[in-house]
Amino acid sequence: MTVLSSKEKIAKRVALLFKDGELANLGVGIPTMVPSFLSDGVEVWLQAENGIIGAGPPASDDKIDPFFKDAGDKFCTILPGGCTFNSATSFGLIRGGHLNYTVLGAMQVDEQGNLANWMVPGGKLAGMGGAMDLVTGAKQVIVATEHCSKDGSSKILKQCTFPLTGAKVVDIIITELAYIKVTAQGLVLKEIAAGVTVEEVISKTAASLIIDENIKTMPI
Image 1 (tube, rainbow, N blue to C red):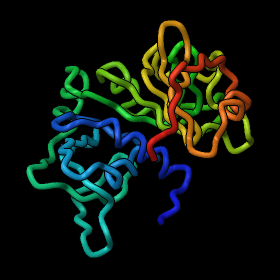
Image 2: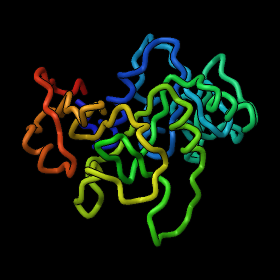
Image 3: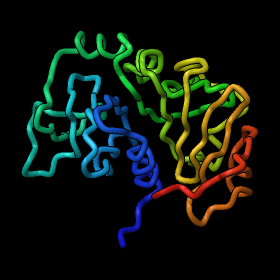
Image 4: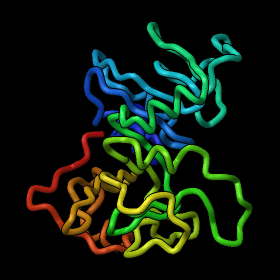
């Protein structure tokens, strides 16, 4: 039995959300791992905002094509029926509301569904990329992130302190510990990972959590 890393567990749970025929955008980091975990028989069209629809899993050394890279600037495969196009077309799809999902990482996310993932105050300014367009244009926004930062502090807060990528845009938060739904009432803990307790998730979450009556184990 293959033991998944924390990041792989997150990517696998995200992949289980997608349904046949949907169009999803995958951002940098953990989201680029999602294609490796898509269910057999489910045809999902994956977009990279640099100009691909039909992106597949990472390319092995013998399958590298210099024209196919994902949002993280890593070589990827492209599936039968896939295509490439320019940035204007790509952002036309995003801004036109054609994406069923966008999947992004986060530095911070809070109880209101606010997302901060593009700049640390006082840090090096890397640029926002297409994140602000994506969280505004997609029908559902999924945050795929490890539950805590490297220093052990929670990434899920009562209120973001970093500059926002988008205000009240997040629908779902998936970490290696939990599946959390953002609602008008607050953050609802829907699932916990195998071997993890509700108390552990609460202790590692700076935001308040509403515990679902029918809380389940994450299917990963």
